[in-house]
Image 1 (cartoon, helix red, strand yellow):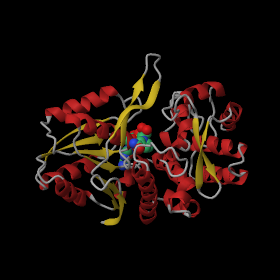
Image 2: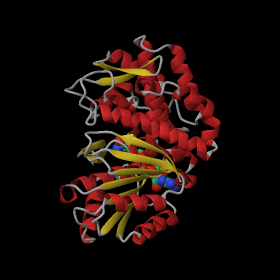
Image 3: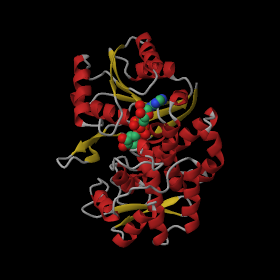
Length: 388
Ligand SMILES: NC(=O)c1ccc[n+]([C@@H]2O[C@H](COP(=O)([O-])OP(=O)(O)OC[C@H]3O[C@@H](n4cnc5c(N)ncnc54)[C@H](O)[C@@H]3O)[C@@H](O)[C@H]2O)c1
C-alpha cells in the first residue's frame, strides 16, 4: 500500500518518484514494467543481510511481469564497497546478457545502493537503476539523489570513502517500510543520525517543525510504529528531494540552499568512520562505527564549532546532544587518535575544495551555513569535544 509519493524534480526528463508505503513488492514490479516497457531482463543486486523471503518475493513479482531475473548477493561492509566488488557485479551483469534497456535493481542498504547505482551508471555507459532501500538510512538519504560510488584503498592501506563514483539518478525509488522489520536496532538508530541532520537544515527546505517532531516521536520511532516510520521517511525524503532539486551535482556556490549543506556532520564523520577501532559503546566488539554513528559524532563536532563561532547557541548543541543520546547514538567516543591526525584525515575528504576545509555549521532555527577555512584551533577543539 503506497502511503505517499515524493517527486524529485530535476530537469523534467529525469524526474522520478519516491514511493513510501507498506508491502510494495507488487507495486514495484508494476512500476518497473511501466518504466521499462521493452525490457526483457532485470538484474537484482542484493544485500546479504536481507531475509531470503525479501529477495524471493521481488524475483517472483518481477517474473510475473515477464522479466527474466538474475542477481548477485554482496556483503555490505565499507572494505567491500570497493572496485573489486564493482568488478564482480559488472561481470555478473554482463554474464546475464543484460541490455541497455534492462534495469538494475538495488535491494539493500546504502552500500548496495551505491555499488549497484555505480554499476548501472557504467555498464554499457548507463542502464536504468531502481533503488529499493532496506535500511532507514538508505530510505531517508542514500537512495535519493543519484550519488553512487565505491571507496578507494590507497597504497598506505587506508580507505578513502566514496572517492570514485558517478551521478546516476534512479528511475524510481521504492521505500517499503515493511522491510525495516528485520533491520537490527543498531542500524535503525544509525539511520536516525541522517534524520537529525535533515532536521537541522529543514527550516530552509519547507519543514521547520521536523526537529521537534522527531523529539516527540522518538519513542514511537524506536518502537517501530509503522505509521510513524512512514511519516519519518516521507518527511526526510521530501527534504532530500528539495535539496537535490536545487543543486543536483553539488555545484552551487551560494551558501543558501546548496547540496553541500547535506554534508553537515560528514566532514568530521567520514574521517572518524575510517578509523577501524572506534566503537559507539567503547566495547571493542562493537567496532567499527556505523556510518550513522560517525555522522552523529560529526554533527556534535559541527555544533561545537558552530557554538565557538557563535553561529549556534549552546542550548541548540545540548538539545541535539540529548536527542541523539535518546536515540541511542554516540555523542562522544573513546580511543580517538590525536586531534591533528583526525584533522589530517578530514583533509582527505572529498568535501575539501581547492585545499580549503569547508564545514557546514548548524544555526539556530533549522538552518545551516557553510564555513570555509575555519580556524584550526576551533576545529581541533571541536574534535576534542567528542573525545571521552
Ligand atoms: N549515495 C548517497 O547519497 C549516500 C548517502 C548516505 C550514505 N551513503 C552510504 O551508505 C552507506 C551506509 O548505508 P547503510 O547505513 O544503509 O548501511 P549498509 O548498507 O552497510 O547496511 C547496514 C547493514 O544492514 C543490513 N541490512 C540492510 N537491510 C536490512 C534489512 N531490511 N534487514 C536486516 N538487515 C539489513 C546489511 O546487510 C548491513 O549489514 C555508506 O557506505 C555511506 O557512504 C550514501
